[in-house]
Structures are given as structure tokens and as C-alpha cells.
Image 1 (cartoon, helix red, strand yellow):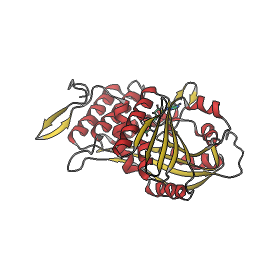
Image 2 (cartoon, rainbow, N blue to C red):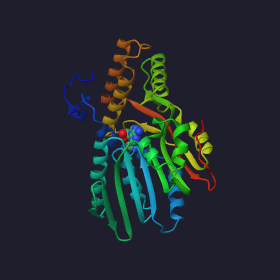
Image 3 (cartoon, protein in one colour):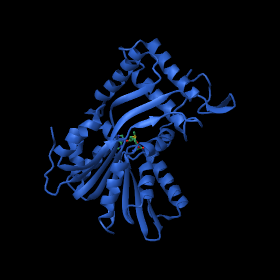
Image 4 (tube, rainbow, N blue to C red):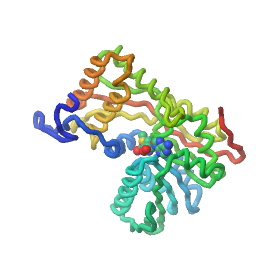
Length: 336
Ligand SMILES: C[S@@+](CC[C@H](N)C(=O)[O-])C[C@H]1O[C@@H](n2cnc3c(N)ncnc32)[C@H](O)[C@@H]1O
């Protein structure tokens, strides 16, 4: 049962195999790090390819990139490894100071490991160089909404990136404001947008499983943060309309589902932790929900953690990726 082991993310042996004890403390930094391999598999290759091809067509002009909700900066590592451009200024923005600090630490480490020279120019900024490649990476602790207020209407970015973020905001309000940040013909690469399916297998009790999934999605649909409606469970499908309404043309879209299961070697990388964290997130979202019998729900959560320990849990979340371009002539206004 969760917490019974009295170990934070320790390991023990069962039948000769090293297994992870159920964590009794959770770390968001570790969750985002464990999510990297899950996202790597999930990101839609057609959409990613179209992004890289579009960037290569720009020639050697320096690319200005803004990523919001960047977390610990895993997208920076990915983007640099795609080698789509030589000259780059990449600003990674996140609300949480500890995540921003970790993003800077990781990016510097990643760059050194990849053979770049790393220079710290000012606090919160590093410059990395290798041969013709020259990138300035800036780490900005900021609330997206404050950032939008400060910069409204100044369309200067060539590429906006958001990974596993847009399902936390109100699309009709936020997407037009994001569009206004783009330079003419600037691109949006919006990935891992949740879209209405959270699947745990094997079934425990199909009716209860469905009820828990529906209530979990309801918490997304009714979430209010700082007085604002904040995201929803069908963000992926609604992005088609929200992007078009905000004057973007869609260049590519496709599924980016998370699919996590144990192979012959167990769950890959740190995905055992990833799964425990996901199940604990469902617990946190629903533990006081009056529409659930609390004792049945606790048993359900315990059973899911046990399935992870046994390597039998399969987890699938349906998500969509998008590449869109700002149309040359569009005046941005709110959609509703
Ligand atoms: C699900 S995480 C995704 C992080 C990262 N993009 C990734 O995929 O690993 C969402 C991130 O959005 C950040 N965030 C949430 N609300 C924000 C806001 N209003 N302004 C800036 N960042 C925010 C959180 O701190 C968190 O790091």
C-alpha cells in the first residue's frame, strides 16, 4: 500500500528482480525528468519532421524561440539535439523558480556532454557554442499571464513551443495572445496536448474505472487557478478551432499518446516512478470527491500502485501535437 514501505523511491528485490518501492514522497522535478522518455516516444514524428523541415528552409538566420511552461527544460535538450538551426536564442519560461534553476543546470550539463563550450554570460543565461552552432539559452522565472501583459502585441518570436502545457490554460483567451507574440509567419509547435482519454489496464472494476476516469477529467474541466478557468480535458481536439480562430494556419497535426508498459526488462528508464506519480496525481485530484466512495477509491489507488510494482499496469493517455503558422495578415483579438 502507498506509504507502507516507509521508503522514498527506494528499491528492493523480488524474485531476483530489482523493483521500486512505492514512493511515499513525490517530487515534481523527478516526475518531469521521468516523463522525458515517455514524451520522447510519444511526440508525433510527422509533426516534428515538418517543424524541422520548415526551420531548415529559413536558411541561417538566427531563430528566436520562446517556450512557456518549460519545466526542467527537457524540450531544450530535444530541440538542440534535432540540429534544425545553427544560430538560436531560446528563452524558457516557467512559473516555478526551482524548475527554472533545474532547467539551467540540466541544459548546461547536456551541452557539455554533447561537446559544446558553455559560457555563463549573466545570471539566468548561458551561451553554448560548437563549430558553427551558437545558442544563447535564457531561463526566465515568470507567470505566463504577467509575461503576456508585459509584452502584449510585440510580435517578435519566430517559434513558440509549449509541451504538456496548453491543457492548463483557457484556449480561447490564451491562444490569440500567444499568436500575437509571433513574428509574421512565425511558427507554433504545441505538443502533448491532452485529449480526453486516461486509460489504465488491466481493468479493476470496469464501471468504477470509467467513473474515476470521468471524475478525473471533470477536475480538469472545472479547474480555476488565480480566478481563471484553467484548461480542460479535451484540449487537443479544441486546438484545431482555437488555432484557426486565432489566425494560424495548421501545417501538421497528429497523435502523441503516452503508452507506458513493462517489457522484458520492466518499465524503461524511470517510468516506474512516472507511473506511481501519475496514480498519485489521480489520488490527489479525487481523494475528497463526494461522488466517490472513499474506501473503494483508496483500494483502487492501492491496487494501481501494486500493479505497477508487479509490472502489469499499462497506462495510456491520448494527446495531440500541432504545428501551425501565423498567417501574414491577421489582427489578433480574443475569440470569446
Ligand atoms: C505539465 S508541466 C510541463 C513541463 C514541461 N513543458 C515538460 O513537458 O516537461 C507544466 C509546466 O507549466 C508550468 N506553469 C503552469 N502555469 C504556469 C504559468 N501561469 N506560467 C508559466 N508557467 C506555468 C508549471 O510550473 C510546469 O512546469
